[in-house]
Image (cartoon, rainbow, N blue to C red):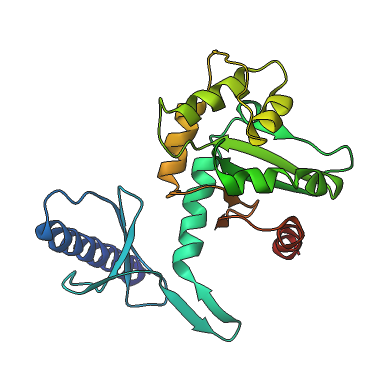
Length: 237
């Protein structure tokens, strides 16, 4: 069976050579490009290059040809977005570090059937619209977990409002008040707002609301509560 071990060793060396060649070609375009990983994609002639920024590009084994965008696979079971599947793995790894006790959580009185993570901005119009429908989600067993993503950045007015909401004695009441356009009572405490904002950036979030479902799928923008509930049912089936 030595020949089998030799084959595996050869394949390993070949893959390492491909990765080194691709890395050299990509960084040769611009030395400022930082590569996080280079991995062969199973059953394809492509390699996925993940940049430190979180962006993904695809190349052949020479690194001399590459494309930026999502990679799809057509099979007997339909079309799969391989890029989105890869992104979900990254999201789950980032979200694993999230401490539920540092989120602003609205829990239903009925049994929890779905959990929804929402990156939100206090002053975002569509975030407010979604929050105005939160009781419908709660009535249908959806636990809503809010994470901070003040679009104007750390130190902005929206950032300060979120800190006040988080540090309030009654976070839910303060969040609902703020989402109604009122200014929450100023409060300061040890808070995760900056960390959550940075995590959102690592996830590639650029706007709010951004919804993240339990399977790691991410949906930017507002959805009416009925459509949102139907989406969660489909994803869990």
